[in-house]
Length: 504
Image (cartoon, rainbow, N blue to C red; front, side, top):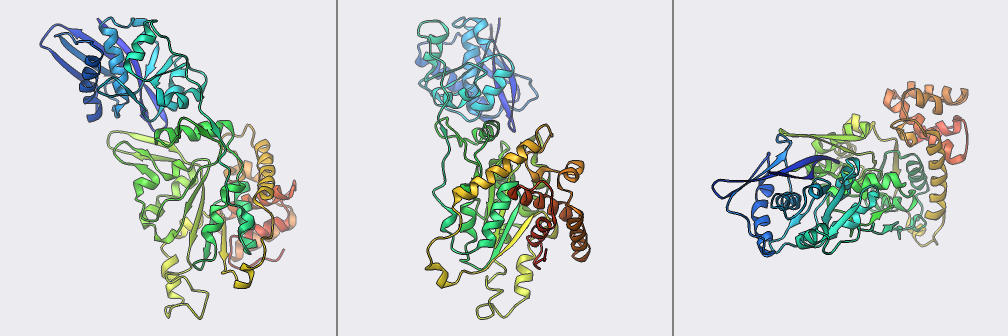
């Protein structure tokens, strides 16, 4: 007799269904697992055998074969322990066959039968709901998995609890979703003294999800400005929160099963490897670009990142997804993020200060900023010089709008975009608009078009740069509540892309 249970194998954020087949047949006593298991899955036989022994369940002196189907799909991770034990309990007639075949299980087993939480419970629950099955998982993963809502989630503390639940001795109540947190930022934009132009750029970037670069001397406030960006971003929508949480679930970043409505803010160090930024490693885990999905990726000391790491950002910025290609698998992760970069103007940092700059001006700045390729620089919608703040300004009281006031304007602009792109596939904000959609929503009036054409010809804007100016101009118009993109909107958008000011 062959007993069947079900679990999932993760390929990116996709959870692919795996059928766990268990057969107990006559022959030399053995316990083998086939179906392309990795080392962790192969070791499951020892954990399962010892856990069953701790429950006073002795394995028969027969040949036990476990097959993980489809056999050509790589199986990785310790979450296969529970489904293997589940299928084996069915083969031993301890659990009914109709029970084991109606459940998707995942969880790691301790030697005493305790179930250990594993990553990926949220996408596993999505897969279970798709196949009209319930989900069985460790107690620590139940609150996370229950967020799906479409599938019943049974969270058990031990393998003994699993047996008692499915045999009717002590039924377990379905798991409840964890807490919803907003994580309001304690950092207020009002705390930044001066830098009005940089704060304006931050507001525009937040409203349209535009990529932004700050360039300025050390201590001018670049990192301080970026750290306050989360305080003006709108909260995640329920769909975005679920989508982002699925990626964080695979990375093991969900705290006690709770889902956050705050947008991700990732700030990797400039020594991070390509696998850390883009994703990869032995199990092709999501990188920082995917962990920042629907949020912000802040890269301080941007030119200090390895050149190869910077160049790999070009495609994800354009496509909104990253494909991690390995010899045995191709894994795709979503990565629609807002890139915020900060850099000093040169190696010494004081290129614009004649009293403090080194003797290699301007070559020092050209060599340092030259580490950022032209194609990558062309992908930044807004580029802002952040000058040092005068000491006299530091003594002045806080001024300017607070984060709450700016956030309200950003939220209004985002709502306009939500209505605008309703029904448009692949577009949620102005930064996503392209082709006919971009022409329809961002075509400027006569004066605005004349100015843009003049600037494009004089400063040799690329086609990408031309379109990015249009997107930023559309966002500026949204912030002002204007239905048409006019000359002042185009002028301001161009001024954030070029070093030279443009007069409207």
